[in-house]
Image (cartoon, rainbow, N blue to C red; front, side, top):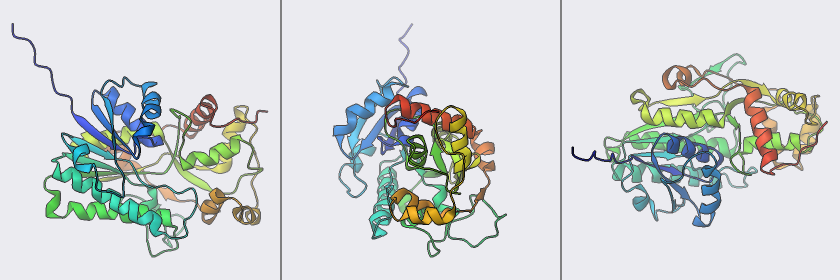
Amino acid sequence: MPAKKKTKKQIVLVTGASGFIAKHCIVRLLNEGYSVRGSLRSLERADEVHAAIATKASTDDLTFVELNLSSDEGWPAAMQGCDFVQHVASPFPNSEPKDENELIIPAREGALRAVRAAAKAGVKRVVLTSSMAAIAYGHDHDDDYVYDEKDWSKIDGNIGAYLKSKTIAEKAAWDFMDSAEAGGMELSVINPGAVLGPLLDNTYSTSGDLLGKLLKGEVPACPKIGFSCIDVRDVADAHFAAMTKPEAAGRRYLCIGEYAWMLDISKILSGAGYKTPTKTMPNFIVHILAVFDKTIRMIKSGLDKKTNCNNERLRSELGIEPRSIKEMTLSMAESMVKFGAVSPKMR
């Protein structure tokens, strides 16, 4: 009897492999039997990223390449032989930049480099990581308005550089798909809200920075800000479903679960034994603190505002049932402690 032919594994390029979301995307892909090529701005980080991913998946089919969102160098080689691309890399600020183009240009040009190189290499589908930032900001809608995938943030509205950059980058990718250069390639877009959930090493998202501040006792009370939250594992699952489901071609997905005020998150931590605040901070104090704290400065415009969003498409088309606020909060806190990212105060 002739030997059975070994099936060639499909190859997926995941950009920004050192990022919080990207590492979970890579874990999901490896566990599903794909070969993954992760991009890094510097290969000096390859060992630490490899070690983090190895805690959750076999890394026999994981390799790394060096890419920069601001340079054409290396993109054709990185795309060679790839069946799919998950373009997760995007600049994320720790504070509002003096010049908004510091964020907008790399985000837009990085998205275009990814889709252009993918189309040229014959990639089947690109999954682009955008953000809820590209959907729900800059509008004057009533408080009961519910955002969904038909909405776009208004870049001429009163929004910050990061929100603009995500909107402009995603629109540039969709515009490219309308060009002859795109050929037969498909695009699907994931628009996550605030991403919480377990760390794979000691690095975490900017969304997680607020949780870190709570755990470290740096916030005496909770500003009245809230977020449409999603677990990083659900985000990775959404990327995988958007890559593999035929009906996801040409679609964008608002990737959010429950809405939570910062106080809700803090009370969950408090109930688990962490010494976190259980009272709300008056708005005038938030404005004073924002002068000295760049993280608070970025979120103060959201004071007292609740953004309502619809995740029906995520659930019905991609089959994602988001994890609870409690699960994503406690899993993030526990992993932050485990990897030494924070030294929490306990009750």
